[in-house]
Image 1 (tube, rainbow, N blue to C red):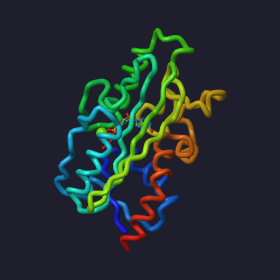
Image 2: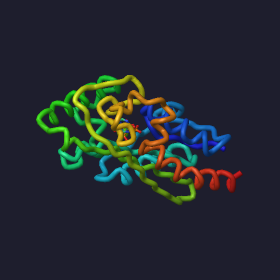
Image 3: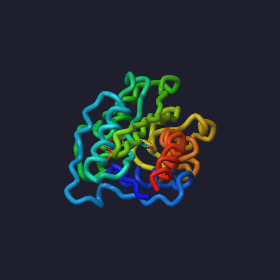
Image 4: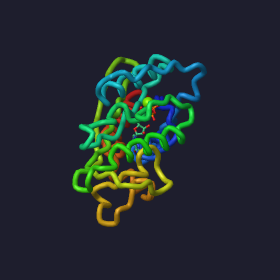
Length: 210
Ligand SMILES: O=P(O)(O)OP(=O)(O)OP(=O)(O)OC[C@H]1O[C@@H](n2cnc3c(O)ncnc32)[C@H](O)[C@@H]1O
Ligand SMILES: [Mg+2]
């Protein structure tokens, strides 16, 4: 059975495929790059769930396939929950180059938090995953990963803000999410938690559609 993954972020797609594959066997995943002239919606909703639904609905409209979309971001306590839904473009750019955008976003965030003391550097990643079927049925699940923002970038795994984020589970060693093995990030991540909650529904829907 084929499923459409409505994302342009190749590292996010890798994580989603990795997590899904463990729980939904025999699923063939297509992505935005498999669809000529894919019309990406503007992510203009105030919530992760709203944007995830928007992206998944666009996937169904473009492909006729059941579609999954993830909308996620970093919520920093000292910034009143920002960058939040603006995480991908916090430094303002709409760059095609994701690596450059990530680097600028991290530099800006660290600068904004320069005078924030250690005890007030709490943050969490949030993720909403939407599952939309061609018959119009919709489901959204959410997950989060709590932790803190460190003072310098560390690590080369993951993507986005992983280099500045230490999850609560790794607070003692001070390992950033970018320093974790992929399987360990999946185990504790916002995306892993949300997708594992969604997986049984995806598996059941795909089985009944066969
Ligand atoms: O919308 P799509 O095409 O899926 O890809 P995107 O990268 O634009 O994804 P979002 O709109 O959901 O923005 C999420 C941003 O939040 C950050 N982010 C989300 N999950 C993350 C994670 O697991 N680790 C680090 N940063 C993350 C990162 O900057 C992402 O670009
Ligand atoms: Mg996006």
